[in-house]
Image (cartoon, rainbow, N blue to C red; front, side, top):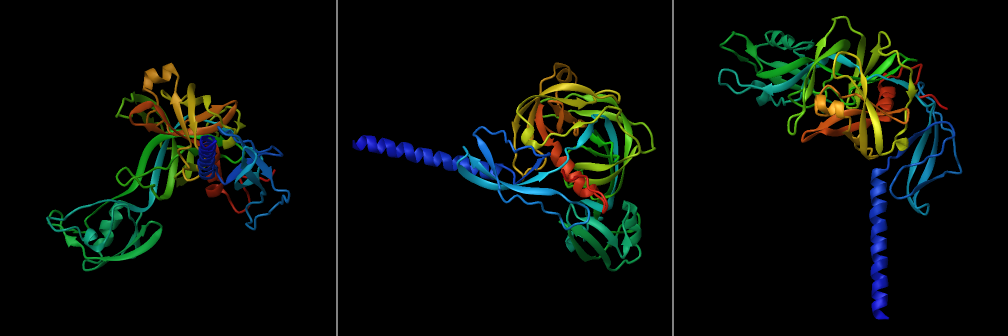
Length: 412
C-alpha cells in the first residue's frame, strides 16, 4: 500500500510539474495581442489545446488619437479549456488585401546625420574624438552649430573652430553634447577629430508587398543597417529604384551567397519614408506589380508545413518556389524571426544554394494568403533561414506611415 501511495504521489508530482512547465512556456510564448477579422473566433495552433474564453463585458474602445478608431475586446486563454494562462487583447480590423511582389529594388539611403563607423589616430596622436568620449555607432548631427548632411560637412565645420569643437550627437536615442579639441594633420594641414563616418548607403533587397489602395509598400523584413556598427541607419531621406538581377553567388556552409544587381535608372520608382527593424516602408510612384491582391493572414492562422515564396534570382521577374515552414514562434520579444523556413524547391537550391543575401523581403504565401517574408539565412545551412510575419510588417507600416487623417487599420 505504501509503495502504491509513493507511486501515485510521484506520478501526481510529475504531472503537476509538467503542467507548470507547459503553463510557463505558453505564458511566455503566446503574444498579448491578436488581430481578428469580422466576427471570427480566435483559434490558436498549438501542440497542446489552447481555448479562448471571451470577456462577457465586451466593450468597444475608441482610441483618443485622431488617426485611429479600432474595435477591442479581451479573451482569456486557457490550457485544455481549464487552466487560465493569460488575458490577451483582440483587435478586430478589416483584413488587409495586399499585392505580394517578390521583385528586386534598389535602396538608396541618406542618413540623418553621420554615423561614426570607427575612430583613428592622427599622425600618431590619439583620436581626439575617442578622448572626448565619442563611440562607434554614435550619430553626429551637428558640429559647431552646423547641421551634418554629408561626411565632408564635418571637416568643413571643424576648421571654423580650431581650439574647441562642439559636437552634438545621438546615442541610444539620447542627445549628447561633447567638446573636442581637434588635431591638425600633417598630411593635409587640416584639423581633424579622428573619426570615420558614413552618411549614405546603397544596396538591393526584395519588395514584400504593395498596398494598391494607398500606394505604399513594405520591403526587406528587417532594417538597413550599417555594415560596420550593425545598427539601423537613421533615415533622412531615401529612394527606391529599379534593379535587375545580373548574377548569383551561390550559398555554401559558412559562406552565405548573394544576388548581384544593377541599378537600371537614376529615376526613383518610389520614396523610402521609414527604415525600421521590421523593414523599409514608403510610397510608390506606380504599382510595382500588375497582379491582384490577396488576403493577409494573421499569425494564428499560419501553420507548419508547405508554403511558397516569390523571389527573383535573374532579371526582374519573380517566380514562385516551394518551401517548408518548420517552426512558428509567437514570442513578441522577437519581431523579425517569427518562423523557421526551409527551401525545398530543387531549382532554387540548384541555382542559389537556398536563401542568399538580396532575397530578404521575398513574400511567403500559404493557402492563398500572404503570411510573411524571408529575413535571414542560416550561415551553416543556406537552405534554411528565418522569416517575419506579414502581420508584423503591416502593423509597423501602419504605425510609421499613418497620417493624421487616415489609418491603415480600419475598424471592422
